[in-house]
Length: 482
Image (cartoon, rainbow, N blue to C red; front, side, top):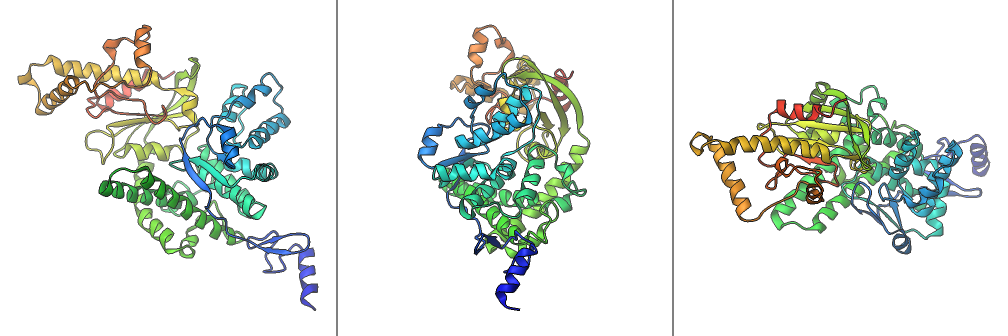
């Protein structure tokens, strides 16, 4: 049998004539008349530089610069045309296609719009690219897109959506792992990681998942960035360099995963990828994985003991809205909040108390995902904590100096020194205006070292001189319980 006859028979039977894998295979692209070698997707043109949590972007400028925005971007104006319409599945599809055509592949504004109508569609940016590859490819070709821009402090959705988009741009189609990768990222982004694999919650299994490898790479890159900043001083270029390293390493992992698509379960143990990547990526994983496993093990124990309840907070329009509330204790509060997001639904407030013997970080942290900060207004929670802290400080001030502990006396001196130097700080923007309108009692706020609302209004970290005990922290938060 000639080679050409063999090739034709293989194609007719649904197998790749070049390697014998089921078509379409991970190694080769198949046109009508030729076989194209699969090209690994490059990170060139990718930029994790936008703020997280709904950056306002000028679409005309982005498109003029041949730039597509992914997994962020407060693109809401186009939704006006759908107000009042019957949002059937067909119309919902139209909405996703419309934002893609405009150059913003982001689900957050769409999620909020649909949720207001009682419709809950879980479709992260990666899932959007996988579900509408034709629309994405047409958009990139029509606008001659050469750059893909997403948010800094990348997550699995921003990286994977960038990878799928660049695959369309460079290879004209999704990679073979595209559908499975989108399903994986979608479950992570909507807090349903427990559905991915029966052993996903086990620390020793988690560190060998795609998310575990990503967190290992990210942890090491952040450590390297921190070290370089300590040695050379802060520079945005340093942060950008290490953000780029995260993206490049993940693209390398995904390229290898795509070649191994037939034999690999992208939602399971993917540790087989480690030996097939370059030295730099392998070193990042090997150094970060033990630390991630240890942190995840402790997190799992703390998470299982957490209190879970329903709370009522305000939304951005001032209306009461229900939220899931988790209250826990952990010696690593920021790690706890970040890992919690993969196990909880987006409408969850994670409150974790660390205490004075914590490993590092704040006395306590209360967080929501940056995306959810466009829905929830945590100012009332922030004010309640400031009031509780103010009462504790007033009690310290009321003591004669001779009766204060050494620590209390030092705090008083530090507060007085900051006040004398005019180092005042509002807990959040527009607090003075709220006081002027009579919405907030000035006697209940702190003007020196307050408990702030930061990170795009998604995080309430304790003040540096927090005085609350866990019992008092717990009591403040339970004022919001239904």
